[in-house]
Length: 343
Image (cartoon, rainbow, N blue to C red; front, side):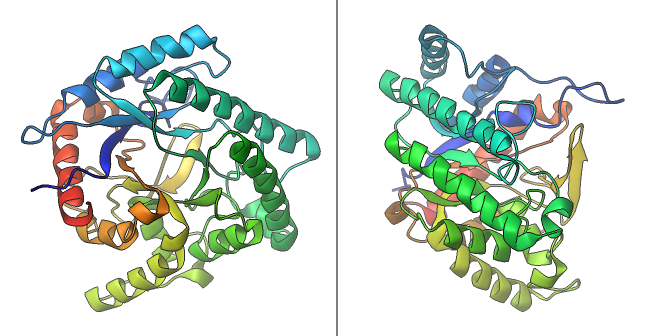
């Protein structure tokens, strides 16, 4: 019998991240309705996506919307036989929040984003469309240049912000997952994000969000060469030894997981530049054995409270996102991951 858990989710933010703006060649955002439609129509041998993870910001939704606005959105999602899982909090400058390593005023904005996201989570939970998942955060400090000027002080400041955010989340019965991504200061390498989580030291509330594409670049030490675990031209044996080393350190903290592919490059679009590149599930240049890599992260996942996994195809071109076959292929790979690593 095939595994039924974890539940299979699709991310909605690929319709937003790197889209819009006034830059030449910028592609328009894809609305929530269209992303839901593409997700609901995907099919892999009769298996369907079971839910979506959401970005709590415009143009997909107004985090300051009324209770009725959230109910209408929840009804729309539930009407497509989908659940809601993890929620991406709008912690960045230009949304609700601001840098977690910034001034008191910036920290207050970051914490305001957490409070508003907890309200949104409660509305979705009370509706019944959301039964599991976390709130995803990062340092909201794009790039590592400013952080490198005083790493110890800046990491301590981020940890202070995260501790205060965790208290807010815990009061609402939520957990926070720190996104492991090379572009966010203080979490731009496996070593730095691990030290940050240990400094926060609230494992019951603050954990790690692992993305296969992003954490591959952790191995390469793209933004922290001193933390690289493999060198260019690595062998298979070297790769898997390094992968085990990295996942053994980060897996105990991992409470949210993204299935993805990476070709060893960074990518950017619009205002979101030099981030971990996501590739189609069947990209011939993909460096990862997706199913085998997922197994390293999903060991004992149920014990860490993981009830769903999510595909992340951030910054795919709109033509790729609009192609129904893209989602059928992704869903098929997600099914492979669940059959091999689920329960």
